[in-house]
Image (cartoon, rainbow, N blue to C red):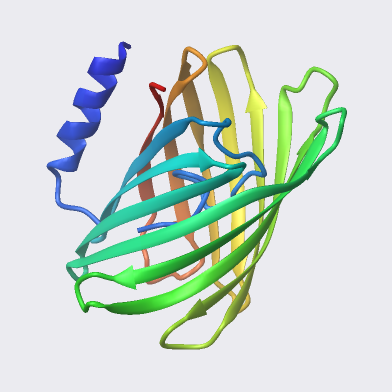
Length: 224
């Protein structure tokens, strides 16, 4: 798939009414990597369930060793809402062997529909390579969410990436918050060269009042 074709697909998806998410592109569990120096990327995903739908676009750039991103999310159901999220992420330590890395991220959210500040969040992602070939990577998250309305919540997550080949990667994760909510996703990532990929994920929530969802994610490194 060419870059033009991938962007055309993403544009077509954006015409569908939808609704926001967290760090780690279409995943809830973040990794400890950032955009390479002096480079930008665009991560986006379409998440659809019954009755909720969501579209999120997150452009991000590395400036002076820190990744800065601005997420824009549109929720179509059950309520029409628009949310903006500003985030900064920095690698705190990376082992010389590159077998593990630790990062920190800080984010703030605004509800554009209501025109007010919606809260902030903090996260510590740790990534560990599980084998000498680097085919398996584990991601561990500890975080804190402080919404403007409601109680503060601790969060934690475990994610797995396992390369089946140079193009295909299995993705799996479990994410939980202190109040007992648990989220799980399982899917595949298809790489197109070193800089572009597409994710397809099936997810579910421990809240039996919410239905499973399907996520389609697009990740692009932008030209310098």
